[in-house]
Length: 219
Length: 88
Image (cartoon, rainbow over all chains, first blue to last red; front, side):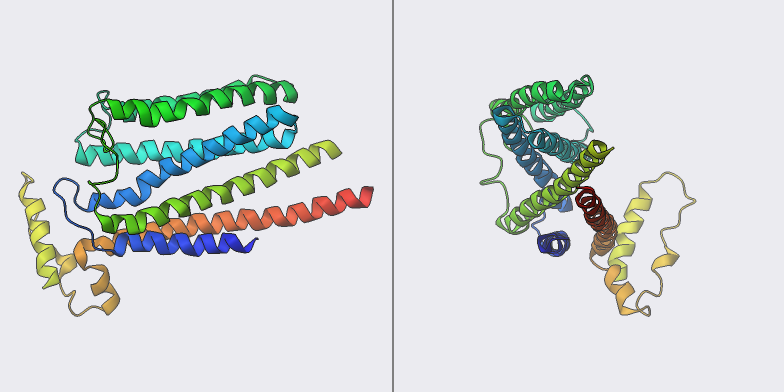
Protein backbone atom coordinates (compact mmCIF):
# COMPACT_ATOMS: atom_id res chain seq x y z
CA UNK A 1 0.00 0.00 0.00
CA UNK A 2 1.32 3.41 -0.96
CA UNK A 3 2.39 5.75 1.86
CA UNK A 4 -0.07 8.55 0.97
CA UNK A 5 -2.92 6.26 1.92
CA UNK A 6 -1.64 5.94 5.47
CA UNK A 7 -1.39 9.72 5.60
CA UNK A 8 -5.03 10.00 4.46
CA UNK A 9 -6.09 7.49 7.14
CA UNK A 10 -4.38 9.36 9.98
CA UNK A 11 -5.36 12.78 8.61
CA UNK A 12 -9.05 11.85 8.36
CA UNK A 13 -9.02 10.46 11.89
CA UNK A 14 -7.61 13.74 13.19
CA UNK A 15 -10.11 15.82 11.19
CA UNK A 16 -13.13 13.77 12.34
CA UNK A 17 -12.01 13.98 15.98
CA UNK A 18 -11.29 17.70 15.75
CA UNK A 19 -14.73 18.22 14.24
CA UNK A 20 -16.28 16.92 17.42
CA UNK A 21 -13.84 18.47 19.83
CA UNK A 22 -13.69 22.14 18.81
CA UNK A 23 -16.02 24.62 20.47
CA UNK A 24 -18.55 26.04 18.04
CA UNK A 25 -20.87 29.02 18.50
CA UNK A 26 -24.32 27.99 19.69
CA UNK A 27 -26.89 29.23 17.18
CA UNK A 28 -30.61 28.67 17.86
CA UNK A 29 -32.22 25.87 15.79
CA UNK A 30 -28.83 24.82 14.38
CA UNK A 31 -27.07 24.18 17.74
CA UNK A 32 -24.58 21.29 17.65
CA UNK A 33 -25.89 20.18 14.26
CA UNK A 34 -23.72 22.93 12.77
CA UNK A 35 -20.96 20.29 12.96
CA UNK A 36 -22.71 18.58 10.06
CA UNK A 37 -21.01 21.20 7.92
CA UNK A 38 -17.81 19.12 8.25
CA UNK A 39 -19.56 16.02 6.91
CA UNK A 40 -22.53 16.93 4.74
CA UNK A 41 -20.93 19.64 2.60
CA UNK A 42 -17.68 17.73 1.82
CA UNK A 43 -19.86 14.93 0.41
CA UNK A 44 -21.03 17.30 -2.32
CA UNK A 45 -17.55 18.73 -2.90
CA UNK A 46 -16.18 15.22 -3.27
CA UNK A 47 -18.99 14.26 -5.62
CA UNK A 48 -18.23 17.33 -7.69
CA UNK A 49 -14.52 16.48 -7.95
CA UNK A 50 -15.31 12.85 -8.82
CA UNK A 51 -17.69 13.93 -11.59
CA UNK A 52 -15.15 16.40 -12.93
CA UNK A 53 -12.65 13.54 -13.10
CA UNK A 54 -15.24 11.40 -14.89
CA UNK A 55 -15.79 14.28 -17.33
CA UNK A 56 -12.07 14.48 -18.04
CA UNK A 57 -11.71 10.71 -18.46
CA UNK A 58 -14.71 10.60 -20.80
CA UNK A 59 -13.17 13.26 -23.02
CA UNK A 60 -9.88 11.38 -22.99
CA UNK A 61 -11.69 8.21 -24.02
CA UNK A 62 -13.35 9.89 -27.00
CA UNK A 63 -9.95 11.33 -27.89
CA UNK A 64 -7.94 8.11 -28.19
CA UNK A 65 -10.43 5.29 -27.43
CA UNK A 66 -8.15 3.69 -24.90
CA UNK A 67 -10.41 1.45 -22.75
CA UNK A 68 -8.51 2.49 -19.59
CA UNK A 69 -10.20 5.90 -19.77
CA UNK A 70 -13.63 4.36 -19.94
CA UNK A 71 -12.81 2.20 -16.95
CA UNK A 72 -11.64 5.22 -14.98
CA UNK A 73 -14.64 7.30 -16.00
CA UNK A 74 -17.02 4.60 -14.83
CA UNK A 75 -15.24 4.29 -11.48
CA UNK A 76 -15.18 8.05 -10.91
CA UNK A 77 -18.88 8.28 -11.70
CA UNK A 78 -19.71 5.41 -9.35
CA UNK A 79 -17.71 6.88 -6.46
CA UNK A 80 -19.16 10.33 -7.14
CA UNK A 81 -22.66 8.89 -7.09
CA UNK A 82 -22.00 7.15 -3.76
CA UNK A 83 -20.82 10.41 -2.22
CA UNK A 84 -23.78 12.26 -3.74
CA UNK A 85 -26.23 9.77 -2.24
CA UNK A 86 -24.50 10.23 1.14
CA UNK A 87 -24.96 13.99 0.68
CA UNK A 88 -28.67 13.57 -0.05
CA UNK A 89 -29.26 11.27 2.93
CA UNK A 90 -27.29 13.40 5.40
CA UNK A 91 -29.00 16.53 4.06
CA UNK A 92 -32.40 14.96 4.54
CA UNK A 93 -31.64 13.98 8.13
CA UNK A 94 -30.26 17.44 8.88
CA UNK A 95 -33.31 19.08 7.30
CA UNK A 96 -35.63 17.07 9.53
CA UNK A 97 -34.20 18.67 12.65
CA UNK A 98 -33.57 22.20 11.36
CA UNK A 99 -36.30 22.76 8.76
CA UNK A 100 -38.72 20.28 10.31
CA UNK A 101 -39.15 17.97 7.34
CA UNK A 102 -37.31 15.06 5.74
CA UNK A 103 -38.09 16.29 2.26
CA UNK A 104 -39.80 19.30 0.79
CA UNK A 105 -40.60 19.98 -2.84
CA UNK A 106 -40.39 23.70 -2.25
CA UNK A 107 -36.63 23.41 -1.70
CA UNK A 108 -34.94 23.71 -5.11
CA UNK A 109 -31.46 22.57 -4.12
CA UNK A 110 -32.75 19.40 -2.51
CA UNK A 111 -34.83 18.42 -5.51
CA UNK A 112 -32.33 19.40 -8.16
CA UNK A 113 -29.56 17.46 -6.44
CA UNK A 114 -31.84 14.42 -6.37
CA UNK A 115 -32.43 14.99 -10.07
CA UNK A 116 -28.66 15.14 -10.62
CA UNK A 117 -28.31 11.78 -8.88
CA UNK A 118 -30.96 10.32 -11.20
CA UNK A 119 -28.98 11.49 -14.23
CA UNK A 120 -26.01 9.46 -13.02
CA UNK A 121 -28.12 6.45 -12.10
CA UNK A 122 -29.27 6.57 -15.73
CA UNK A 123 -25.58 6.47 -16.76
CA UNK A 124 -25.26 3.00 -15.23
CA UNK A 125 -28.54 1.84 -16.73
CA UNK A 126 -27.28 3.02 -20.11
CA UNK A 127 -24.01 1.15 -19.62
CA UNK A 128 -25.82 -2.07 -18.78
CA UNK A 129 -27.74 -1.87 -22.06
CA UNK A 130 -24.70 -2.65 -24.24
CA UNK A 131 -22.80 -5.90 -24.68
CA UNK A 132 -20.25 -4.50 -27.06
CA UNK A 133 -17.60 -2.81 -24.89
CA UNK A 134 -16.53 -0.28 -27.55
CA UNK A 135 -20.08 0.85 -28.21
CA UNK A 136 -20.79 0.98 -24.50
CA UNK A 137 -17.69 3.04 -23.79
CA UNK A 138 -18.37 5.52 -26.59
CA UNK A 139 -22.03 6.15 -25.85
CA UNK A 140 -21.54 6.30 -22.08
CA UNK A 141 -18.66 8.78 -22.53
CA UNK A 142 -20.89 11.05 -24.57
CA UNK A 143 -23.69 10.67 -22.03
CA UNK A 144 -21.33 11.38 -19.14
CA UNK A 145 -20.08 14.60 -20.72
CA UNK A 146 -23.69 15.72 -21.05
CA UNK A 147 -24.50 14.57 -17.50
CA UNK A 148 -21.61 16.37 -15.84
CA UNK A 149 -22.34 19.57 -17.75
CA UNK A 150 -25.79 19.73 -16.10
CA UNK A 151 -24.26 19.66 -12.59
CA UNK A 152 -23.27 23.36 -12.29
CA UNK A 153 -26.75 24.39 -13.39
CA UNK A 154 -28.59 21.98 -11.13
CA UNK A 155 -26.49 22.50 -8.03
CA UNK A 156 -25.27 26.08 -8.26
CA UNK A 157 -26.91 28.34 -10.79
CA UNK A 158 -30.62 27.51 -10.51
CA UNK A 159 -30.77 27.08 -6.68
CA UNK A 160 -29.13 30.46 -6.20
CA UNK A 161 -31.80 32.24 -8.20
CA UNK A 162 -34.67 30.83 -6.17
CA UNK A 163 -35.82 31.47 -2.60
CA UNK A 164 -34.83 28.65 -0.27
CA UNK A 165 -33.91 27.83 3.31
CA UNK A 166 -30.68 26.24 2.19
CA UNK A 167 -27.59 28.46 2.55
CA UNK A 168 -26.55 29.79 -0.83
CA UNK A 169 -30.05 30.69 -2.06
CA UNK A 170 -31.69 33.93 -3.12
CA UNK A 171 -28.51 35.16 -4.73
CA UNK A 172 -26.45 35.02 -1.52
CA UNK A 173 -23.23 33.04 -1.40
CA UNK A 174 -23.42 29.83 0.61
CA UNK A 175 -20.59 30.56 2.91
CA UNK A 176 -19.21 34.04 3.32
CA UNK A 177 -20.98 35.99 6.08
CA UNK A 178 -23.18 33.32 7.59
CA UNK A 179 -20.56 30.79 8.60
CA UNK A 180 -18.56 31.22 11.81
CA UNK A 181 -14.82 31.45 11.06
CA UNK A 182 -13.88 28.62 13.45
CA UNK A 183 -15.99 26.19 11.42
CA UNK A 184 -13.76 26.82 8.41
CA UNK A 185 -10.73 25.48 10.30
CA UNK A 186 -12.26 22.02 10.14
CA UNK A 187 -14.38 22.41 7.04
CA UNK A 188 -11.60 22.94 4.48
CA UNK A 189 -9.38 20.13 5.83
CA UNK A 190 -12.45 17.86 5.84
CA UNK A 191 -13.10 18.64 2.16
CA UNK A 192 -9.49 17.76 1.31
CA UNK A 193 -9.69 14.60 3.41
CA UNK A 194 -12.88 13.30 1.83
CA UNK A 195 -11.59 14.03 -1.68
CA UNK A 196 -8.39 12.11 -0.88
CA UNK A 197 -10.47 9.26 0.52
CA UNK A 198 -12.56 9.14 -2.66
CA UNK A 199 -9.40 8.99 -4.78
CA UNK A 200 -8.19 6.09 -2.63
CA UNK A 201 -11.47 4.24 -3.19
CA UNK A 202 -11.28 4.94 -6.94
CA UNK A 203 -7.73 3.59 -6.99
CA UNK A 204 -8.84 0.32 -5.37
CA UNK A 205 -11.82 -0.07 -7.72
CA UNK A 206 -9.70 0.74 -10.80
CA UNK A 207 -7.06 -1.80 -9.86
CA UNK A 208 -9.75 -4.41 -9.31
CA UNK A 209 -11.27 -3.73 -12.74
CA UNK A 210 -7.85 -3.81 -14.42
CA UNK A 211 -7.15 -7.21 -12.87
CA UNK A 212 -10.56 -8.44 -13.93
CA UNK A 213 -9.84 -7.40 -17.53
CA UNK A 214 -6.42 -9.06 -17.41
CA UNK A 215 -7.82 -12.34 -16.09
CA UNK A 216 -10.61 -12.43 -18.66
CA UNK A 217 -8.08 -11.73 -21.43
CA UNK A 218 -5.90 -14.63 -20.29
CA UNK A 219 -8.70 -17.18 -20.19
CA UNK B 1 -21.81 18.91 39.17
CA UNK B 2 -21.68 17.53 35.65
CA UNK B 3 -24.10 14.79 36.54
CA UNK B 4 -26.55 17.38 37.92
CA UNK B 5 -26.60 19.11 34.55
CA UNK B 6 -27.23 15.82 32.85
CA UNK B 7 -29.98 14.91 35.27
CA UNK B 8 -31.70 18.22 34.54
CA UNK B 9 -31.75 17.62 30.81
CA UNK B 10 -32.98 14.10 31.36
CA UNK B 11 -35.81 15.23 33.62
CA UNK B 12 -36.94 17.88 31.14
CA UNK B 13 -37.13 15.23 28.46
CA UNK B 14 -39.11 12.98 30.74
CA UNK B 15 -41.54 15.81 31.63
CA UNK B 16 -42.74 15.96 28.08
CA UNK B 17 -43.92 12.36 28.23
CA UNK B 18 -47.51 11.89 29.32
CA UNK B 19 -47.01 8.68 31.21
CA UNK B 20 -45.87 8.67 34.80
CA UNK B 21 -44.18 5.32 34.59
CA UNK B 22 -40.88 7.10 33.93
CA UNK B 23 -38.99 8.42 36.91
CA UNK B 24 -37.04 11.65 36.64
CA UNK B 25 -34.23 9.96 38.49
CA UNK B 26 -31.96 7.91 36.32
CA UNK B 27 -30.00 5.27 38.23
CA UNK B 28 -27.43 4.94 35.47
CA UNK B 29 -26.02 8.36 36.23
CA UNK B 30 -25.65 7.74 39.95
CA UNK B 31 -22.21 7.31 41.40
CA UNK B 32 -20.56 8.74 38.31
CA UNK B 33 -18.24 10.78 40.53
CA UNK B 34 -16.77 7.57 41.93
CA UNK B 35 -16.32 5.92 38.55
CA UNK B 36 -13.10 6.00 36.58
CA UNK B 37 -11.77 9.14 34.91
CA UNK B 38 -12.53 7.72 31.48
CA UNK B 39 -16.21 7.20 32.29
CA UNK B 40 -16.47 10.68 33.80
CA UNK B 41 -14.87 12.14 30.69
CA UNK B 42 -17.21 10.28 28.35
CA UNK B 43 -20.25 11.42 30.34
CA UNK B 44 -19.25 15.09 30.26
CA UNK B 45 -20.25 17.80 27.73
CA UNK B 46 -23.74 16.47 27.04
CA UNK B 47 -22.32 13.10 25.92
CA UNK B 48 -20.68 14.52 22.77
CA UNK B 49 -17.71 12.18 23.34
CA UNK B 50 -20.01 9.20 23.03
CA UNK B 51 -20.95 10.36 19.53
CA UNK B 52 -17.27 10.90 18.76
CA UNK B 53 -16.55 7.36 19.97
CA UNK B 54 -19.29 5.87 17.83
CA UNK B 55 -18.13 7.83 14.77
CA UNK B 56 -14.52 6.78 15.27
CA UNK B 57 -15.51 3.12 15.64
CA UNK B 58 -17.37 3.27 12.31
CA UNK B 59 -14.50 5.13 10.67
CA UNK B 60 -11.86 2.69 11.93
CA UNK B 61 -13.86 -0.35 10.84
CA UNK B 62 -14.40 1.09 7.34
CA UNK B 63 -10.75 2.13 7.17
CA UNK B 64 -9.59 -1.31 8.26
CA UNK B 65 -11.77 -2.87 5.56
CA UNK B 66 -10.47 -0.51 2.87
CA UNK B 67 -6.84 -1.16 3.85
CA UNK B 68 -7.47 -4.90 3.84
CA UNK B 69 -8.98 -4.83 0.33
CA UNK B 70 -6.13 -2.63 -0.87
CA UNK B 71 -3.51 -5.07 0.46
CA UNK B 72 -5.30 -8.13 -0.93
CA UNK B 73 -5.45 -6.42 -4.31
CA UNK B 74 -1.73 -5.74 -4.22
CA UNK B 75 -1.07 -9.43 -3.56
CA UNK B 76 -3.42 -10.49 -6.34
CA UNK B 77 -1.82 -8.01 -8.73
CA UNK B 78 1.57 -9.46 -7.93
CA UNK B 79 0.53 -13.07 -8.50
CA UNK B 80 -1.44 -12.37 -11.70
CA UNK B 81 1.34 -10.25 -13.17
CA UNK B 82 3.83 -12.99 -12.27
CA UNK B 83 1.67 -15.62 -14.02
CA UNK B 84 1.39 -13.40 -17.06
CA UNK B 85 5.14 -12.89 -17.27
CA UNK B 86 5.75 -16.65 -16.79
CA UNK B 87 3.57 -17.47 -19.74
CA UNK B 88 5.30 -15.12 -22.15
